[in-house]
Length: 233
Image (tube, rainbow, N blue to C red):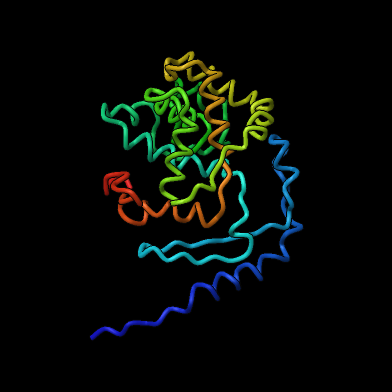
């Protein structure tokens, strides 16, 4: 005999989390390498949860758009895997912890241009390059994907923010040139970095992100059909 435990309402739980973390708004710091992020109000805090059944719960600033930055890496990887008919992606980027900084140049040189995983910057650049085999504008392709999965026309690329971030992307350009020199980048380094920065500059709300990521909780099944195989999801 099993007894079903009644879970407390998520609305109340999320509200409590927001109340508990609001006092921490003065801690931490803005990224020094991305100038426009320093202008974002420091007291914003939002959270959203989308369940596999399609319910969405949120609290705080969950409907305020923000720059998704490295969250974009999850979605570009999903798109790259979905279109990897040749099965070459995992020969270009590994699935191992890096053990170093997310933008390390040293590790990339020592390991001959094969990034440890797709979530450090070098790996994300390889994934972007892989996407650019289908289209030169991988950032807009990602935007369309996110818009479709979120069921919202709200997501957009903040081109002004992207331009500002690109102007301070010397390390990402260095990573891209290392990758290119080792033969692990097929497109021009500058084009790949520009696409990568524009992907990071997509603005979405917490609610839109929660909906867009539901395919991962649904074994790869997205809003408009299958996005990934169950094993990849």
